Image (tube, rainbow, N blue to C red):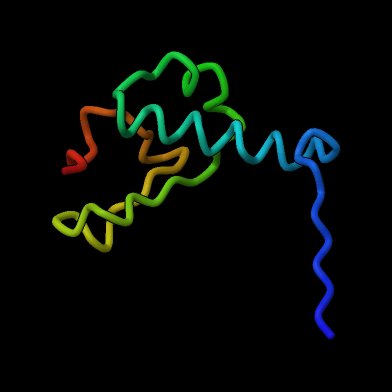
Length: 76
């Protein structure tokens, strides 16, 4: 028999941090708003733009190839 355990996300601070970091990157991609990203950019070591087929295999951003909304392929 399979058992499922449901955890309230407010009880798991690590999940909240991961969710916030994903939201920061998503906001930069979708809304082109860099305010939150710039605040945390030192904590983000790698971003892979899986939808940018034109730049593949160089569709990633790291400390040498810094992320900027002007570099990304627009999401359609």
